[in-house]
Length: 463
Image (cartoon, rainbow, N blue to C red; front, side):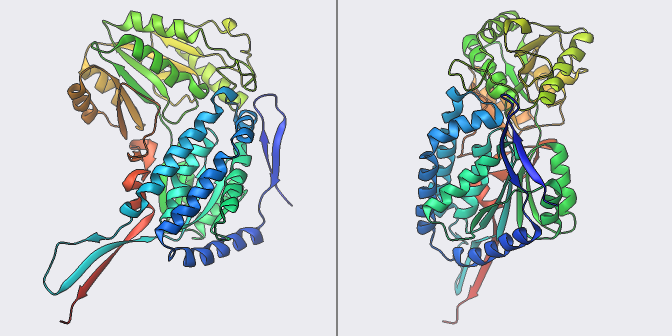
């Protein structure tokens, strides 16, 4: 029996796309074609790979007008922000293309008489990219472009919620003239995905998703020695020191908490503020949050669209209700946001104070437009609370003292330390996490190391 994968729009519940899951024969054929194509691709000069990948990036950008409303229908992001994801897609793709020749160049050992020695970076083979729905172009491009530039073949399995994104990637690479079979998309069930890994059909898996999903990847890969890159959950903190620019911190942290309806991998989910700024900071956040317009993401006036699913919104509402039941206070009236409706994906933003780490809202990933704010006495208390989490993707520090930011950042258990910014990914830096947030890294020179294997050459010269 054929299984159908459907994308149900959070906008109004309509079916945006439905595709049959690939058959066993189709999966086998795709993997065989990838192996064949990769054997030739690994010998293609990097300059030629770069030219083809650049054409694919250009082709994707040429589809911008269609992609923006597609994103709104598939996952609810307002159309006024849709082009921003493509700008990030372009920045990351072009950067990784630009540094590939240098990052993949042989590493030469120090001179030794009568010997020639170097370390080559060999491609892994077939890279299986399993991408999420929340930033479907950005998360996929982190692995897809560098994997191809490193000489690998790529199989992309996109989330059911963003089925059309996988097809856009395929169309872009077809338009660029990439060799047949080198890049392919597959529509798969969770069971099929696990089976591909369990049967050692691929050489590397790059997965972005939940902690539970990461555990499923590890379980499927157990005993296969297949490489895993995992970017999982997060509960990213911010700390506003007493020397911070208050207006800058308010503006950026409200955006960091509520952009994309809070459904960002490195979105701000908890904020610690020096007690001397606490009242003014909270007041500023509330005032700014009230200006958000919750509504249909196809409307240009909307600044906050629906969450991806009704049950995701209900989870956030339960976190807020639990906190209030334990003595916290929710500062925003949902009735101020006319689209807010219990039982639907449309959820108003919420700021909660009087919170403690005994509450789920400060400990467990929310992935929605809610944030808890706590006062702290000093740097030491802020560090302790920021580290009191099973996650560690980014931490955002707001201060005028760069030396203090470096000192505090050194003690925070996280993959990236920001100063006076948040919710951003710099392609020149490794994107990585600690603890339950995952393992491995994408982007930067380090990202290329995870998509290749070192091969040492030790040549004794006969003359």
